[in-house]
Length: 258
Image 1: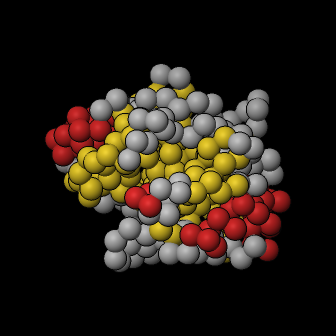
Image 2: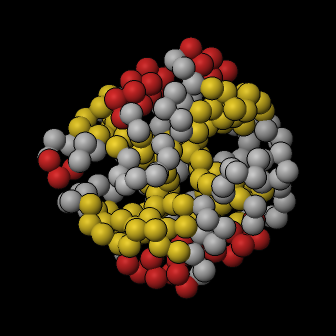
């Protein structure tokens, strides 16, 4: 992710929907140095902002609704949530939650692309999005894992105006000011019960050290730290102790895409 600030059309927010919010706050507090800041209003329902050195980086919230899994969600900034929701439907996606106000923070909708990958749409109110990006402990990259890359390459540019890199096992999403995410085609090595989904990667100073620390804190390593082809990029994928998958990400300052 080359953006250091939130950009219209790009990723702006990540939220940990958790069956055990207190455990999630402890884990990420230890791993990334986040500090919880609950929204104390009763109507906020336990929503908690997570701050990194004073800047809002993410949030942790209880699961709203039965049957929802503990998971990270990724949201993208739009000028108008209602108009973006219409574009989702016109492009073949579905609305899971229709546009609605989130107190005074903004207006949001939850959508799914034609393959079923769920994502958020965010229209800024008091909150524009994360106040820090692409520094250690903050969101550094977002990745779509899908069994229908051709469909995704048609859908997301129609909704958000993204550019898409060349077709292949892995391609990158971008806006005018740079790439911010990627798309991985899910092959036979992915169990059939794993649905298409968006995965956030958090920037760290050392992927190996952070993966080791996360393991000591109760996380499970799903994909061991490894350099990606082309050099300059090292990643790992883990599952936190509450059950949500996330990635770790380090990009060399002088080499590599993203």
